[in-house]
Amino acid sequence: MKKRKIKPDCQYFLGDKPCQFHKQSKMECLHCPHYLPLGYRILVIKLEAMGDVLRTTSILPGLFKKYSPCSITWVTQDKSQDLLKNNPYVYRILTPDTAYLALHIEKFDLLINLDTSIQAASLATLAGANIKKGFGLSVKGYVYPFNPEAEEWF
Image (cartoon, rainbow, N blue to C red; front, side, top):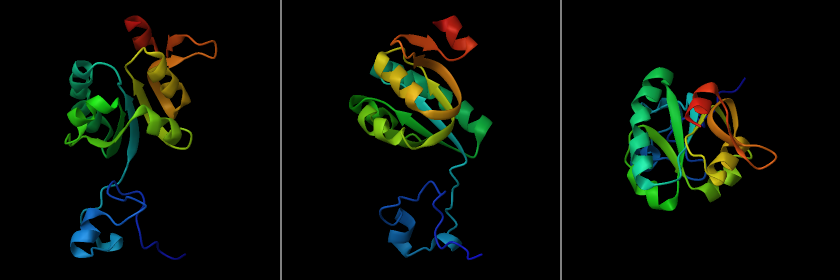
């Protein structure tokens, strides 16, 4: 079997263009010391209220410690993206519009939706994840808790 020349499971892999390390020094994937596997894939949905988005970042070190190596994708509104941009625990930030498209295809190991809005619950229900925590949207259009801990908060 032929060995691949690229590592699409690297957090720096962009798919449509070379990563920063290849651009800087023509580093090839197979020999790159910066290789960082995607690992356990986590999706966090927190759309509403910038203060709540910022407070929710406090869960990231614990998630990273428990599931490392992991990659955390966060879905939030445009106005909250700057709060997450330089966070070392956040692999990728999506808006609800881009997430809607991606969630039809991508699969995650863990989903955490901390919003009870219909938009957030819809995205959480749409997302493919082995484990879902937080809130989803029923086929009848109401928000419901995915797990017992969310039910208590609900």
